[in-house]
Length: 148
Image 1 (cartoon, one colour):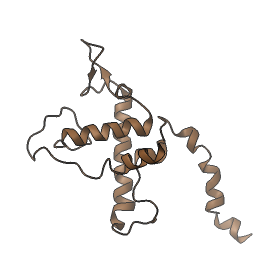
Image 2 (cartoon, rainbow, N blue to C red; image 1 turned 180 degrees about the vertical axis):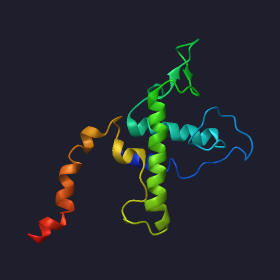
Image 3 (cartoon, one colour; image 1 turned 90 degrees about the vertical axis):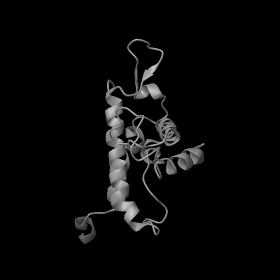
Image 4 (cartoon, rainbow, N blue to C red; image 1 turned 135 degrees about the horizontal axis):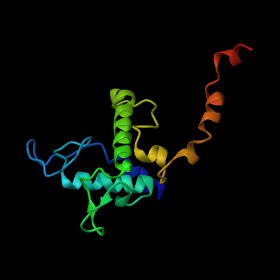
């Protein structure tokens, strides 16, 4: 299962296939390109679902006139804005630290950072990552410790 998540995630944000350079059927896309194809958008959203272990209603609010349907353009839920921020963060990390090194990525065992890199099927990776701060001193000792 984890292999499937990693495969889906590593292929989710590589390429957006535009529907055209001028046409956009989408309302309220603020981070994703306006010309993203429906197939690319749906694949990306399903990757978010799998990476965080959520359904669409985690970020998308219900329609006011029909609560059984989702209002995808709505910004009524804070989780949608958080998702936008997280997407900008991962794009920033990848563009600064991984993409400049292609086709020879550094470190060699990691091509880029994706949602599943930290989330691993959880909406809040805090529990999974809570011990990272304890690991850092062991992995990267401070200069003072080395001098003693």
